[in-house]
Image (cartoon, rainbow, N blue to C red; front, side, top):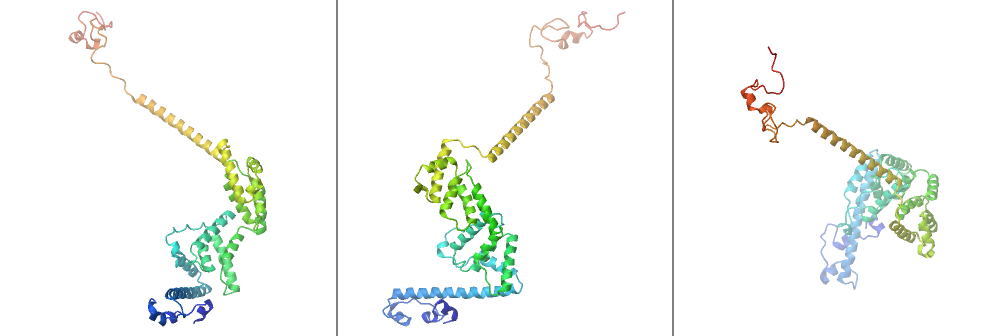
Length: 379
């Protein structure tokens, strides 16, 4: 039995399966049971179950040996100054998780955590929650704190990653065998949001100012309060309920005070009742529009009116240009529409003077009748 196996309480499987490289044969019949390491009076099913447990422990032991050897080599490279080896190892082992449990094979891959950029406490909480959800979904992929840290560091921006690298280098200089943990990484990232005393003071002031808007769902208000409560650490449940109650709309508070206090003695019950009364108020009354939405709607209306007037001007200009470009209608060449219209040349009806046949025969006018204009100088 090797030292690592002895520390884990794992027997050498060679005595059970005939050596590490020997083929594993199913135990069948009384002869096979007698050749295997068995306990007197043990039946075949019990022997198979016991052997399966021993083989699983052996497999876990071999995987642990491989991880120890890999991490020792990685540590040697990092101490020698090769910081890129840590990132390469992280990308290689985090992109293709190994040893994922059978129950997770058919489940969809969870989304990557949101990158933490020290924006606020809400972003920090989302980063921690998403990372821990992935850790719980694949426990065999992240058996140690080092693997959890290697995965979570991938979702830090350059500033926060530099902060963590400096923290790690300081501890490795003080203690060569130091290994990071997930709790240490969370604490260092939380400190990037500012000193704890300042964060607590800001959270207390935020709780005093917290008020529900008429168009705000109580769920949204509760999410905001949860962010502030997380800054205060171990915050009493009764105080949480009182903060939530005082932040609700006055009309909702009046409805809640008419009920028995046992109906909302927890934050979850209070949230359920608050959402019920808020939905009821929303159906019966028209809530005032949020100022930001009102300004946005006004902007859209102004834009629509400007676009409408612009289109009207374009249409008017287009119609005006069409009128100016239109050619005058040609005069009727077939004669007057009124048959009683008389020719000014011959005083006959049915044609105009320009079409008068007599003027074509005698251009100077044979009868002296004409349009009244002179025909030149008289002698």
